[in-house]
Image (cartoon, rainbow, N blue to C red):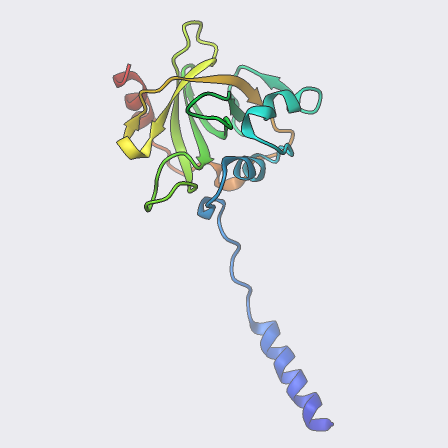
Length: 181
């Protein structure tokens, strides 16, 4: 009995000295855009991405001005049959921002990976963020497709700390946007 207690104490001491491994980063995420946006923004909405705009009515403030931590809701289209959601990570200027999202570009031969500080360019005639173009890793530049944006859902809390990098490439975002016009 005494030997069993000693082994238990030694085992417990060994466990106490072991530090837990750090939590995985939000940027290690691989999956759909909806769970990623929910985790990154703290906005608790479920269902297909295109439904978020309507679901947010009365639950979360909504609008057409980008803010850090807000979720950009892409409407359903032929190319985006389920829509898309992404979280604003930086506002660069009136028509250019950066977003962090998942399941957009192909990385390591598969879709679903998270991408941080990706350029989003407002190409709407009224400068109201109703039509946008998104940086696309597959072509290493701003994509040629224009997507309709329902607007932005504003989070009530603080977004995930990994939403943006310490040194985002503002100049690159501006070049992506304005050279591709």
